[in-house]
Amino acid sequence: GYRTGTSLDVKTLSEAGDYAAMKEAAGRHIDEKMPDARDSTTVAQNYLYISGYNQGPIDDKGLEAITAFYDAQIQRGVKGQPRFIYSHDMPDPVHDAPQDVILHHIDQLAPVVAACRDGINAFQMCFIGAWGEWHSYSDSGDYAIDEAALVRKVLQTVPAGGFAQIRLPQYKNLIPAADPLYKRISFHDDAVFGVYHPWNKELSPGKEQYKQ
Image (tube, rainbow, N blue to C red; front, top):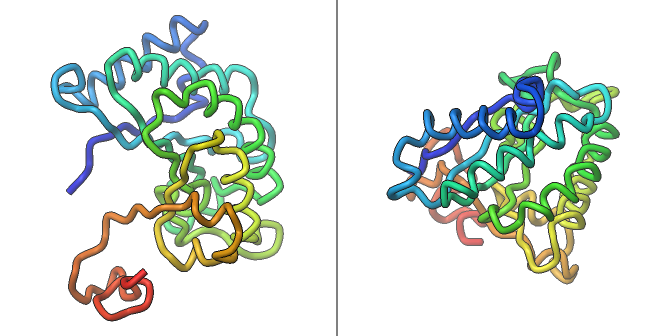
């Protein structure tokens, strides 16, 4: 399966020093995780943990760290598929963020994503759940999530002409098919088996989501 990628804590990278130091640290991480990047790897999954900011805004150093990471990755000829993540476990109420914080982070990340768009293969609908996969996340009280609002917010901040990938058709269908944003959503799912499997029951042959 497709597993080439990186897993990085943004706050930790932001503490590496100035921009040059952050870029150098990001480069070392990329070289360690993708030793063949200079030869054959062209696309990588980027798990970017922003749980260090789960109670407030991402500071300027954090935003610079993300840019430095993509700067280093672009220099290696690799395009990324970013997933911004809070959860470290299933579930993870310690690291999850409330929706108002998530929406503010999306606003903060929009210009970073736009500046790095030449180094992005596709933007994956992330932010909630383990691995940013929209499952096993805190969804009650102060941490209740309006998934439809989150879909719209992400799509409105992806650069014009860009697309977002989402894990399951049920999430794409949270917005009407007649909405122009609907056509900007494609799918990603590393658990489509082509046969029934308890891990992904709704993507079994014959199911409506599988057909979609």
